[in-house]
View (cartoon, helix red, strand yellow):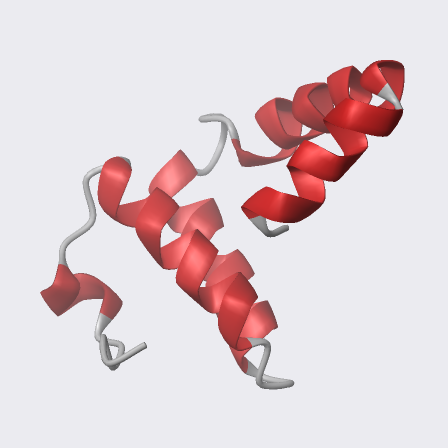
Length: 78
């Protein structure tokens, strides 16, 4: 999800925003698979139909989680 999308949800429906945040923490949090692995899987799912904004957002999240450009291996010309 793009940042502007989340800000719009937060502005118009704070309760839904809390639920979206909780779901993201649950789905993308460390567990049987690490957060980094889950983000890479989500990137692949967004990349297959060509969802550039989703890939960009997930790439930035993966890098914040400790992945490197070499591991992610994407074109950073966006």
